[in-house]
Length: 437
Ligand code: NMX
Ligand code: MLT
Image 1 (cartoon, helix red, strand yellow):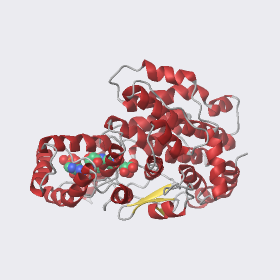
Image 2 (tube, helix red, strand yellow):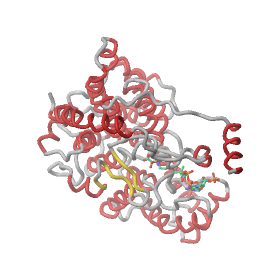
Image 3 (cartoon, protein in one colour):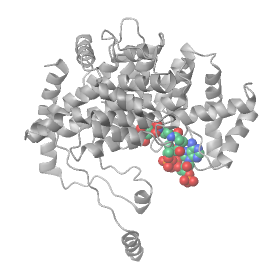
Image 4 (tube, helix red, strand yellow):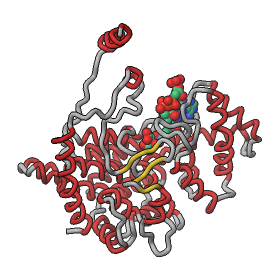
């Protein structure tokens, strides 16, 4: 058995009694209250989900298993010639809460590497997709197609104990995670490179192998590692993580759950914002005739976007109230590796002017940039200019966190999710009763 699975088994055995105790002794304790504004307002801030994988602070940003992003980048083992940590190390951390040793990471790398080969029918499904389909639709379908491989389903049908659900889910999760870069790079080859593809190399880690399959030289291996790590998780309530968790709560397998996750990510208010940023920047560049705009011209372009009723992509957030640390990690990468890049100069100018405009505009609760404002610019710099593809990259990263969550959901026996909905009449009655008090 792999070192990761062995340690996870131990962690699960230690964690289960904590939940049993909480439920036996404190199940009645009130955690939160909910207002009519929150019910109509997308349930912002309502504490009603559990995830030990990551937690988001509105001011400080995401922590993975308690570690800030700078700590994650500092502490996780790195490849000999790389500046960014192994993605496999992050998966280990998210699952176990422990920073892995070099040896433990190599064990995960080998395990995942042995699971990469795609069934032939996945290529056929991707090949059969009509042209001009969005890569996220193809990605979601390709994942769904592999549902027939689910080990969890076989075990479930054979009547395995509920206590052991996590084990077959773990196997499914690793099988799927290992295959996602293969699926994504084949979609890229098919949609944008006339099907010319570079095969996977069994000797490379997750990030380096992806860069290799994309045919892009170093430091794109580090770019890939950084990209998958910063996109991995953002606590449980964001659309993609929540969708993955919700679908899995019906005991649907990880193929169905991750396909659902991808579908949620594909909306422009969520993950698709990374392609929208590039589309918007290209429109700006075109308007400027490829000359860097003055500050006033840039301000005008931002106001024109707002006045036409559109949002400024890459800015604002449902929870964060400061600049997204994931934006900062990527910005620092740009400052180090591509300070003269034209699009980076645009993003840099936008970073300086958009927050003040959004404050003056008076609507957005958070005027600061999120991770999507910066991520596509890096891809563009290294030659991935087909921005429709960017959210697929987000999806590979996000699967790392969602799969970790789903394995733990099974381990702690998280039940079918089924909140109560109410009618407008009921809320009106509650409001009137409250007024009379
Ligand atoms: N540009 C213009 N208006 C904005 C922006 C923005 N970037 N952000 C928020 N607003 C508006 C928002 O549309 C809403 O307007 P209205 O009252 O007319 O409906 C108002 O400000 C209040 O919204 P908030 O409560 O600040 O934001 P909310 O939690 O509803 O939504 C986002 C959060 C992320 C959907 C929103 O900030 C947005 O649309 N941002 C641009 C799209 C984007 O970058 N999405 C990616 C987020 C990160 N991710 O990957 O998921
Ligand atoms: C995410 O990474 O999921 C986004 O920042 C959206 C969110 O957290 O709501």
